[in-house]
Image 1 (cartoon, rainbow, N blue to C red):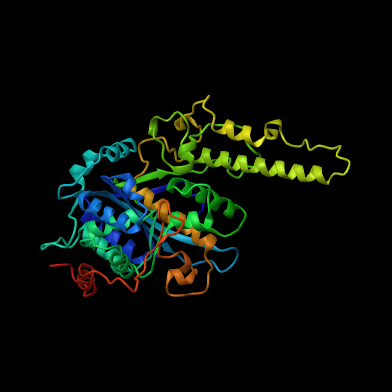
Image 2 (cartoon, one colour):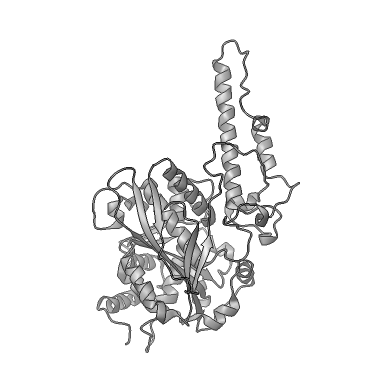
Length: 461
């Protein structure tokens, strides 16, 4: 159903990795697409991440990936079931989500800013060091475990399903260096390699959000929550929407954590709320705030979206009233149907939304079960972030895709070619196109790796 209230995420560690291996493998091999998210030990100099030259960005990121580590990886597998023939377009997905805690077997840099962010958002470093599944960076080594994180990534490549990311350039570089082989020296070769690794396409939900859907903001939590709300409204109107089902995990399965994401009870209410709750304008626009969890104003995406919609609706009412007044020749009647609080001019509304005179804590918003962004535990886990990315992609397919029969590939079936293989670039008005150019060849490391995968053997077994 569209109104899912909680999402099961399976925690995978070195202790249960082999036990869960068949489950993860089946989920990968039967998926229509797979969403991936990473938690990292650092990103290096933030300014160099946005250097004007894209080639220089890649070279810098390659150096970062060689010296930092992946702390956890989230995999969310979305399998499209039979689409109902009657009524509005309904895309029914079965979804399985995994959160793999990892431990790099080599020395790596841990940056204080990344450490603080992860601790503030509930990352358990004690559990990571004691139970993280081991892996090594770079090329394959002799004696590789047949059931390992590296082999799991190889299974993802061999499955030839679309790969879904959010703001995915950093993730792609780290995935390649950490679980595939040594990164090539040039961006051109890297893109040529990726185009062969993922022939079904790489989709970046941040790119699609910014360049096609054009939401007011495009950070992941916001995109997911607005997509979830809009999807529920679509279902209530019997219009095109996405439905989800989850595996019925047994109650005794201790490694399954359920993440609450109930929608507000007032979502479908026809009565416009006049309550003004101050939210953090910085966080509302970009998903980041220098004060972090200590910010006195709300980071709750529901409050942010409610206030945005309120301001937008208020501006529309003002425009409608002006048109009505202009069309009234006698000019004697004024529109008085709306409450006094809705008669406020636009600027005062926006000022009250972002005022500093009040404080609010998300924990006391009175809506049980909502995704509460200021609550440290459970936020920004790779598994749930991967789910949010995948769900956003599913709703984007429903909104932008055009169903055209039983084509073999997911991209062709929904005519998604214009969104594929375009990765968001911060500070640029164009995406990075993942394609092989006439001036770049696939790297030798990639060709050797792909050859081993194509013959179906575990490297050096």
